[in-house]
Image 1 (cartoon, rainbow, N blue to C red):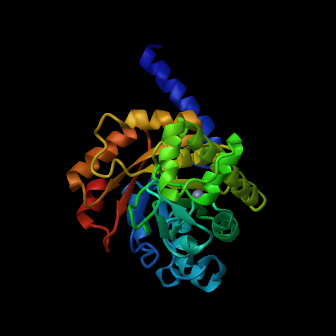
Image 2 (image 1 turned 90 degrees about the horizontal axis):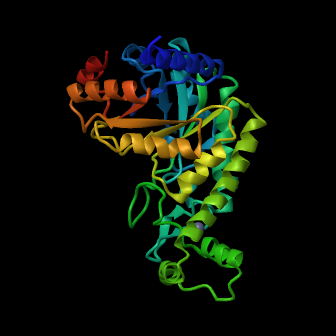
Image 3 (image 1 turned 45 degrees about the vertical axis):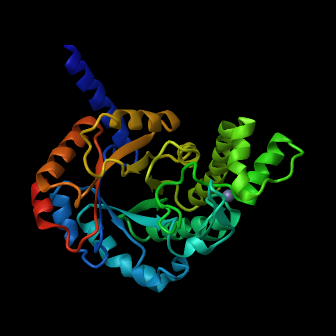
Length: 342
Ligand SMILES: [Zn+2]
């Protein structure tokens, strides 16, 4: 047996053992607007090579605590039924940086000392206890009646930021609780600097790395609580997330979610306009280091790639990492893109 065959045998063995777990070794995910209103799309997406889809919170309850509103959640039942019929795996989008959750608990403070009026501190207790954990628990309970509903994707993009949107990175969080907690942890007698003086204080004290490590540990503790709450409902429920940067927040997420029995899908969006770039292996390796069961997945955006380039990128992703996801924000999904994927 030559080396190539040995590698193939090895890969086949890994895939075989991987298939014993409930989650697939490969995620090919479609995240498109209009999915909830068009369950009939499932069949075409399946034919185009997707095995998973994202359902969003119903738009009419964007301003409510939607996880308490079973009538609105019932509007996703048709797409979940069709997903089951076509053997697609469905994941519920849980927004962290838009919608009602952002109004819960203390505000986040940026590196510049600005209090974001529409963004919760990513670590605040109320945000996790009164929003995120109950929301994921609601979907986990719903999954017991809907076999296609496999889990959630935490949408961590900070859409409502006034200073900036995007991933949760070192731009956050400098709120009284986060920063005060750190000062207490290191046992300094100094009083809390004003908000705009906190980042300069860290730099002057040479404690930036210590601060990010502290926040990472806090994030991991919050994830631990989430994982415990879900395991009590259904141990196979999957929790994945969208947007990745190698920052304190995502390190905490990846480490905390490692306690789950299934792989954690990391939906990266830095590949939106093309995956054929050198950094992808580096991004993947960084994720695996933090969570050996993580599945790093490059995302492609329909408006950023021609159908021909979309097809080339999907092929490349399947060859190199085995997973991909596609984002589309038009209705319907562009027919020429779909055709190129078949
Ligand atoms: Zn904070």
